[in-house]
Amino acid sequence: MISRRDFLRATAAASALTIGSGLGPLGRAAAQQRITQADILRFDPLGTVTILYVADTHAQLMPLHFREPSVNLGVGEVKGMPPHLTDAEFRNYFKIAAGSADAFSLTADDFVALAKNYGRMGGMDRIATLIGAVRAERGDDKVLLLDGGDSWQGSWTSLQTKAQDMVDVMSALKLDAMVGHWEFTYGAERVKQIADSAPFAFLAQNIRDNEWQEPVFEARKMFERGGATIAVIGQALPRTAVANPRWMFPNWEFGIREEDIQKQVDEARAAGASIVVLLSHNGFDVDRKLAGRVKGLDVILTAHTHDAMPGLIKVGNTVLVATGSHGKFVSRLDIEVKDKKVADIRFKLMPVFSDAIKPDPAMTALVEKVRAPFARDLAREIGKTDSLLYRRGNFNGTFDDLICNAMMAERDAEIVLSPGFRWGGTLIPGDAITWEQITNATAITYPNCYRNQMTGTQIKEVLEDVADNIFHPDPYFQGGGDMVRMGGMGYAIDISKPMGSRISAMTHLKSGKPIEASKTYTVSGWASINENTQGPPIWDVVAAHVAKVSTVKIEPNTAVKVTGT
Image 1 (cartoon, rainbow, N blue to C red):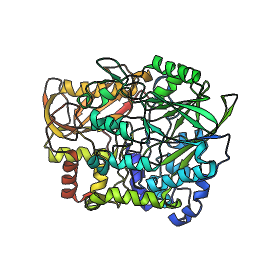
Image 2 (cartoon, rainbow, N blue to C red):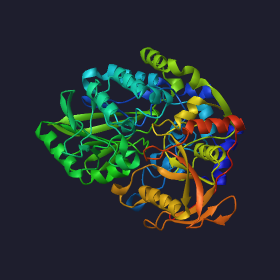
Image 3 (spheres, rainbow, N blue to C red):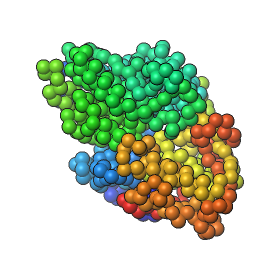
Image 4 (cartoon, rainbow, N blue to C red):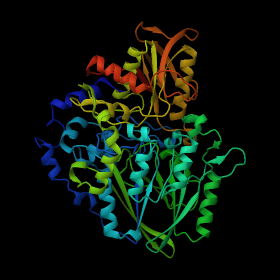
């Protein structure tokens, strides 16, 4: 939910660069002088094994801005615990100074001012530089590179090449293994084609053929690094067949499969593994619960919920690593092994400050090559923004408000629904809105923007279902993501209540009248999981709207009232 205070703070920051930033009158160049590649890489090495970890890059080849959420609520036992801390609470917990580089990369407040000082983050050629530097320091034989999934989707180039751009990049990085979620939306045939031919392992212990219950992918792979045997167990998103179109992989079944994970751990130990890693796309809260129930896991590399944390979270003898999203961070985990057991672990979340890191020339050339066929389209300017446009937040994001406004205008709808996806870059006031930035927030394989009739009861059922997916007190029933975004309608939500009773006070904003249970409304939305959904692709809808308004200005959205926090 975006409060008026939060909104005004974000939009006003563009003209108040020295207020509250903690940087005084420093400009971007001066700030960058305090952040060097050497600073980012500085680390006191430990043991003979290094694991490097990236996740949820969402096919972002180039540096970008990405604002972390200002609202990220936890429920049940994890209420008020990381990663469900934001802004000052997050900084206090991890002892981060306001206005610092870490504050910019990990929290949301004062984002515009800090973005102008610290610049963009990510970029595959910068990530390649960091990976190469660690390999040069430690030796290739001591370093394992792992990817937590959601790497092949989220950009125009990945959509147009059916993920080949990212497969080429990951191959060039000499990736060792990965897992999946959004990858499966390219369809079973394409995913299997890549998995069977790529020079890296595609792992998923929890996907079965629904006829014979046979494994679809390799469950576990053993690696030798630094004289130690490392077992990596793969875990795809358990709820993929619910969150995404099942018809794209009709013969596969998913699930957490906790007992099977335990079996994989036991088999890995019996086979001589000194280190057992779960490479997981479960989401952080699911992995935190799992860590307390599965015995023998040394490390869980967690993904899906896009959390970035500069410290390890320990559950029993298992440490959890959350490495963020969109290429903003590379996690380094050094492990000391004694008597074929983990004796000590040292960790650093390395921020990928694009201006501070020298691009890797070979990766720069590869990125330019894969983008070249689409370069003219990507750079096409559609309009510009006077507002901060961002995606993350449990209830609203201003980029989502733009998408909702576009559907309202272009599809002549009374009410619109837009999924609470956590991927897509951030634009700061004054930025041009290009085709690339629109598609970075919309590029999926089922993009059709439908226009249907729904009753008030049906709309409430949608909201209740999504709310339970996010705020169920048992993490094993959560699916990650954020609340569906609404246009043309407001509502109240009590996140502490059970399924079916969280949503109330549904109001049609234009008329000010309550939504009637039996009344039919014209509703538009996109990313339907139903096969053969009709309508124009959402990127065309958004582009048409932006072209008409020319300059985007998002008004404060206070239509969602949240209680029970």
